[in-house]
Image (cartoon, rainbow, N blue to C red; front, side):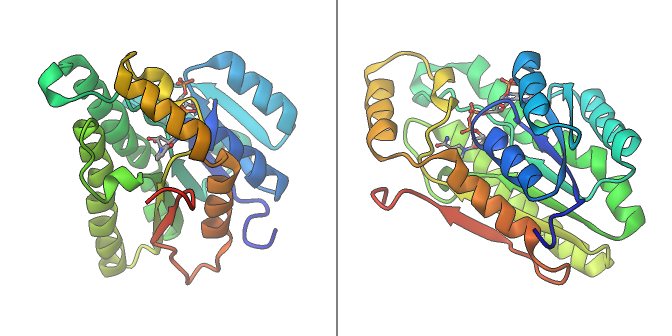
Amino acid sequence: MHGVENKVILITGASSGIGEASARLLASNGAKVVLSARREDRLRSLAGEIGENAVWLKSDVSNAGDMKALAALAKDRFGKIDVLFANAGIMPGSNMSELRVSDWMSMIDINIKGVLNSMAAVLPEFIAQKRGHIIVTSSVAGTRPVPGNAVYSGTKHFVRAMLDSFRAESVAEGTNIRTTAIYPGAVKTELLNTVAPSQAKSMVEEFYKNVGIEPEIIANAVLYAVSQPDNVDVSDLTVRPSKES
Ligand SMILES: NC(=O)c1ccc[n+]([C@@H]2O[C@H](COP(=O)([O-])OP(=O)(O)OC[C@H]3O[C@@H](n4cnc5c(N)ncnc54)[C@H](OP(=O)(O)O)[C@@H]3O)[C@@H](O)[C@H]2O)c1
């Protein structure tokens, strides 16, 4: 597809769900994809399916060194970086009163610091070339309060505030770095696997099963943002099931 062909796209959280579906769709439209996640077997198999236009690195977004290594791999194998899709995230939801402090901190490490680590790895390249595109997966939970998921909601609000501010900086500095925040509703992925068993979890699982949309739908939104001409910034895209308010 025009605007996608030969673009080098780093994708975090590429081992399942939205990241995996996006990697497939972008590669089938001519992009070269650089796949990141911790599950090596999943990455190897996805890269094998895509072929020569995919490379992968077992990497943890909470580790700044891993993200630098990912950017270096992209440069080494494909010679440039055009787009970062910072998509890795976890959602071990619970009420604050349950004091699952370790889960809170993991969400901050992955959903916030992970996004920043991956941005820090590509920004020197983007600034030097005065061109680049950063897409981050927020959530509808990043647009409103979500009881039962307060810390997760906070991490996804962070994405919106940070990207909106960064966009203004990029315009003022003339670096031409485009930014897109994607706000999915319920999507059928492995995201609920990190939620501890409870009655609330069973209800959410039921909702996702009955109402959730396929990750390929979010991949379509990513493709749309990537394929726009250089002078167009698709800033925000909310994509949710028609049965989700
Ligand atoms: N599903 C939904 O309904 C929904 C709605 C709104 C927003 N989102 C957001 O969409 C994004 C993708 O989630 P998904 O729904 O596709 O769920 P998923 O299938 O569970 O995918 C999450 C991805 O993140 C990766 N990941 C988690 N921790 C990581 C870490 N420390 N380092 C590197 N990679 C890590 C996972 O890979 P490994 O475990 O192999 O590392 C996996 O590839 C997340 O940011 C999520 O918050 C999802």
